[in-house]
Image 1: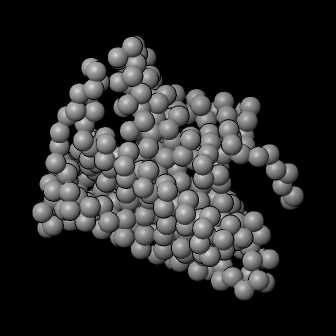
Image 2: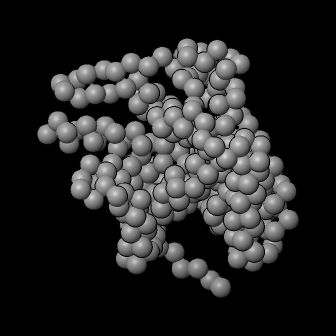
Length: 296
């Protein structure tokens, strides 16, 4: 029983990180109806921002760790807006396939630029916060796991407030529902789309920091697998549905951790994609998604 509960603790920690990344995928899809595959590499950039900023702000303390986290979120937000302006905005009236190919191209560009700038070899990620191990009735919970939970809850709460309690959140939902009608009502669609990219990329940056804290080795290709699994999480929960992305991330984290604790541990990565196939076959709208008829 203790081992089962320990796996739940570990799975929730991993799932929280997937949830943060999945939210970026689902927000962009909700507004523009395409998958930003460069999102996983924004996650990688967030980790590298933390790597370079940490020694300069005295990381290892709570304040220093928070500064690193905010710096990564800020840089990734600017990067997300830049990608949208340069790569995606000129293609809004093009076919979905054109935008998809461009997204893959941006992803490859960031990966190769990362190898050129940061080097291809893995780097040890510095300690950002004081580290402790806590024991609860045989369960081991690290301070880094607690930080993941707290940061994820705060960010999810902030995102919920922005989307449902602010004017810009109302505008985001309006653009997602009908961009043409939103523009006729005086909403600046360009600004809303840029803000959506910034918000989603900031969450990816936070996810990159939290992931590197718990798996402290970073490299320019580190975003590939977590990004793909977060995409599976977004589809599992219901692409375009924010609570669904969070739920899907948690489920993927729990399932992956459970598989890792069995004799089939070598299949931990394959399980996520098997789930994607099953979801697409039997419930393509996802757990919380609604079936919609799309006119073509």
